[in-house]
Amino acid sequence: MKKSVVAFSTLAILSSTFVSPALAGTYTVKSGDNLSKIAQKHNTTVKDLKQLNNLRSDFLRINQKLITPNSKTTSNASSVSVKKTKKTTYTIVSGDTLTRIANKHNLTLAELMKMNNLKSDRIYAGAKLIVSKSTTTTTIDLPSSSKPSNVPTANSSTYIVVKGDTLSKISNKTNLTVAQLKSINSLKSDLIRVGQKLKLSKSASTAPADKNDDGKVEAPSSGNKVAKLVSEAKKLIGTPYSWAGASPSGFDCSGFIYYTFKKAGYEVPRLSSSTYYDMGKKVTSPKSGDLIFFATGSHKAVISHMGIYLGGGEFIHASSSKGVTISTTSNSYFKSKIIGYRSL
Image 1 (cartoon, helix red, strand yellow):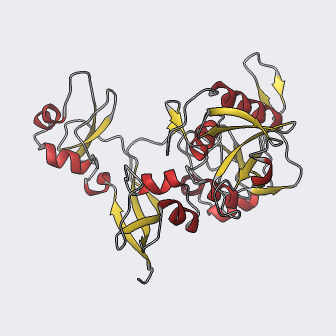
Image 2 (tube, rainbow, N blue to C red):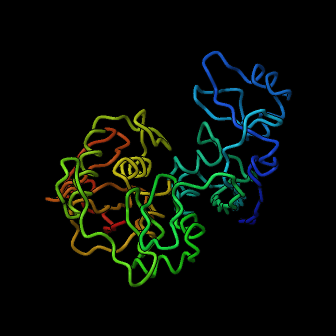
């Protein structure tokens, strides 16, 4: 049977795009609310409410914000987003296993199962599996009667990154291209962190120091960031392993990295181990805070596990057998499986 890999794209405009700001508002879910009650309040149907908010179930959480049509409230939305999803599929052939397919496409078994909503590892020849999925989102600013609080003035020379910012959003606010922002600030990737100061011109200089809570001036230090990262990682020791898990209820190896870096103030996407490896900067002399990568499967060149290097030959990771734990690079199992180190 012939193997086939097919790529296709879908374009989706997020639900808020379909509704004019003048005709839409937001509603904050309160205790006792359900979709039926909210739909009645806003003269709409449960079906339309779910479609408008891209909801796949009737589950709601307290303080969740919903877009409501014909609402009496005024929409707070300042932008809408157009989302484009590209998927690549693989046709299963006789003799395939999920593990082999995952290795072929630089995925972990957990990632492949989650991507295809699989509950077991049973597969059938001729069936199709999604082996990659990427989503790009373009944000379009909407006219607003109120002035955004985080838009730099004409005389601004620096910009402080806030929660939810991306280089693309900052580019739109500052009338600079993403390439210009990266060049001015010597950025090697699109990763930014909350509180980071970005220069908006070649002549601008970022503040050499920040004030702490006591009013004392403290020079920025990568060591402080690393200490925060290691501290957040160690708080999670003992958390159980969970396929595709990315929360304190359970982690897989890349989910642990994603959650820990986010808690430490880094803006990082949720990626697979192999993609983190490709995205990172090569490190020849690893230090605390760098990432360590392993090939634990049958294919020695396929990255399937990762952790945070602590220094002194130790690293912390989400082990499939022990959960979040600290191991050593001299361990007989891990020693021969190390692929290399990277920094984000």
